[in-house]
Image 1 (spheres, helix red, strand yellow):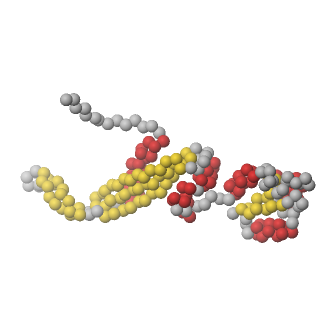
Image 2: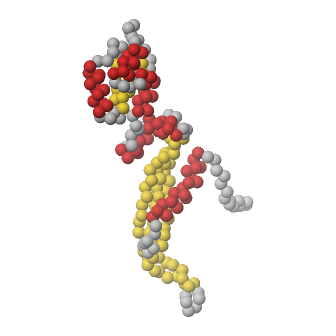
Image 3: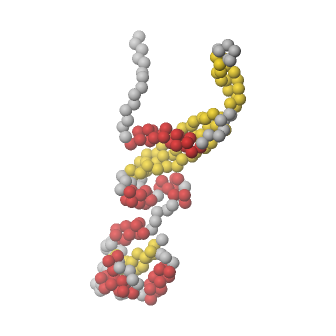
Length: 224
């Protein structure tokens, strides 16, 4: 967490020193600024040195600000973005997370990414055992016959709500929903293996959103 440490051109007030002491004991990161530098009597360099001498913060980190003239505001906002950590993903619902542009811009800056691909996976396991018609080979005749038998099996489903975010603006570029399912014989299948198999099966669909892919298929043309 971050805490403002604001000093006026007149210097450090007693209340400011008290708040700074409390913040340091609470392990908060201080963001020192000198406000009202537009005043004729402004001495931001002297006040920054006083902050370094009394509180122990580096004078070079003190941000001179004039809210009246807008000076130092971009630098202050950038410092706050750097100091205050982005919200943890589990703390927000997906729809709220999509609208949290600062979070996505933070990821874009941290990783130098123009495009951020993220989303939510819903992974489910369902028993689908039941009676089915199966083809077997008769041991006496050697012929293939069809019988109705009880088959133990289970289905794994993988649903991906995928987001393509602009790393520079934090805006949503594209959103898609993909689903795959696979069935395995028996009831003792490895869910981790099924998870990765289903994830791999979706990789081409994900890449095709941002990259042109060649598709080869057979088409029949009938001429009358």
